[in-house]
Length: 229
Image 1 (cartoon, helix red, strand yellow):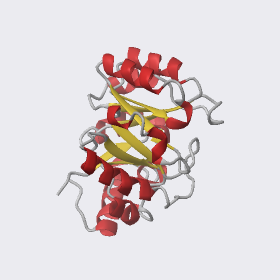
Image 2: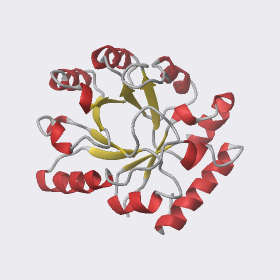
Image 3: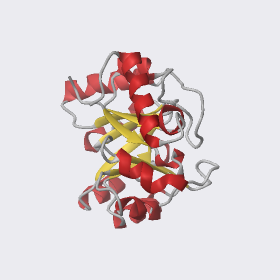
Image 4: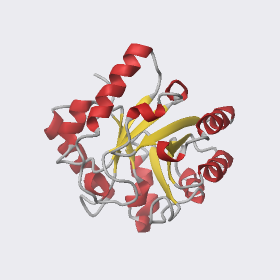
């Protein structure tokens, strides 16, 4: 059975318990999801590249930056300086930039990802899909935690898996948005490689991270009939 990969969204963690939560999660998760918002592409401001330095003080796990920003080039350059392992850009902002930025990320020895909003079709990225290391499918609109789960984008996960097998592409498929007890079964049926989990799926389940993880694990296993290692 394929290993299930989890990437906690750190903008939803309890920053008062930063060290405690990261230290525990280091033993259980596969990467960390870093949301970077500029207040323009989406109205909120969240984490910034400096946060990567703080996490690296207590973790060696890969970090994946999700750029919800208008100026993709500026933020890609900042994240390359931080040697962020995954740099994931919104397809809606990549017109005229995609090939240059993907090459720039790869030349720095890092991995390039692209993110699709719920209404963005996968053919938007067909011209450069063979160069992408990860595709993130949003199951909420970008920019806000706690939104309702949108089921229709799961069809894109199924289509991307079929396309990957048919064409021999190497990208990973990630889902991001309201991954929790109510949606785990539907997501599992679509079959992404990576689950991004946030407040409703992990951090908000209990008053400490160990209890929260155990509840998330229980919720996932009961919903899907599969075990988390």
